[in-house]
Image (tube, rainbow, N blue to C red):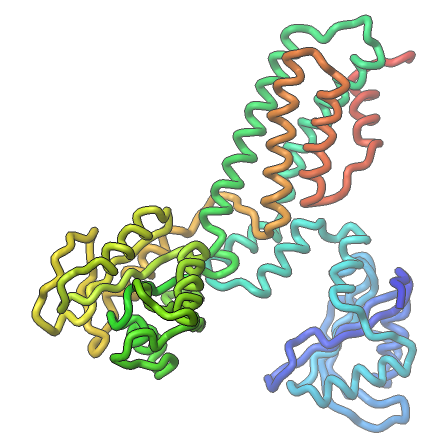
Amino acid sequence: MSFLKNDTIVAIATAHGIGSVSIVRVSGDDALKIALKLTKKDSLTPRHATFGGVYSLDGEFIDEAVMIYFKSPASFTGEDIVEFQTHGGIVVCDMILNELVKAGARVANPGEFSKRAFLNNKLDLSKANAISSLINSKSESAAKILARQMRGELEKYADDMRAGLVRTLAYVETSIDYADDDLPDDLLAQIQNMLKDNIKKLDNIVSISERRRGLIDGFKIAIIGKPNVGKSSMLNALLNYERAIVSNEAGTTRDRVEESLKIGTHLVRIIDTAGIRNGAGKVEEIGIAHSLKAVDEADIILAVFDVSQESDKQDDRILEILSKSDKKIFYILNKSDLQTKFDKNLTNPLKISTKNSLESVTNAINEYLNTQDSSELMLSQTSQITACKTASDALKRASQILSESELELFAYEINVAIKCIASMTRPLEYSEVLDEMFSSFCLGK
């Protein structure tokens, strides 16, 4: 069904399952009128909690609930909203939702409440994306970052940069229209400085966001090593249950095994990989290829070595792979309860036995993850990172073009940059450029 702004929509606003409270939300022009049909009340006071019964249209009692009426425009969607806060459980919520549909509402499409909030200028795209990411956040650090975005931090960043670029575009567009008048030298210098400053800001936020993306999506940790060093035993010990098969036979793990694990305040994805060795069979080689891919995907690598065995060519191969990686690496010397024979010098190795506590490993990982927290602004979506990269590239081209006095091409690249930045918040309207032109210049009075 196509979206109609004046439709009254309804949805269950809490996750499915058993809980103490569930919420059914109605939004639209007729939200209050439809909601009142189920309450046997004549009115609801805006922004006040009203306790009472909820009934079917046939008058049959369904449940007791707290009703809250948010009058337009002071609501999440900018429309009239009524919330029914009922006892938890899907059955009661479904009964109320069905009665509201019978009374004239329709079931909302996925994300339609947020879509209406955007269309009614109650939130921009940066805040909408922050809401989506916050729901799926994997750590307390992520929640704090996204909360700042919901309060408008990214919106202000984008709007400030956008305003400067629109102002520059207005100057240049005017100069194109009045070609006989060259841009003053001091203005050219100001524009170049503005471009340089914005390029630096864009490149910086992209760098921070890519390095610390794990704060939003959850960090990936790959366990690698040759066969029989204890990788699967380490996974099982970290999870505190037998997730992976453990055997003395080389090549037991042939495919990657992934599980989620909470370390400190961070939810991480830990990956046990096939042992990397020479002379493996065809099927095992596929598993090894997956292991190498996991190294590329991971944010953190746990490189496990058997301290009870002398190093060999397979260990050398592991170390060669790690030497080419820019990921955070923790070197683990397993089987430390046995006699030490391993003869390689590793950087700050952690000596453990998977038969005993892995506290030193989890503590080291947690300390590292905590250092990744950032008070600096960062982007939460891949699309935002791509937009900033594209905008930066456009500004770099614009800077070169400006030095060659190709104003039409310069204006084109500035437009590209503005549209990319606007894609994170709200679309560009050409009236913004016109407003800036007429406010800055007296054109024909």
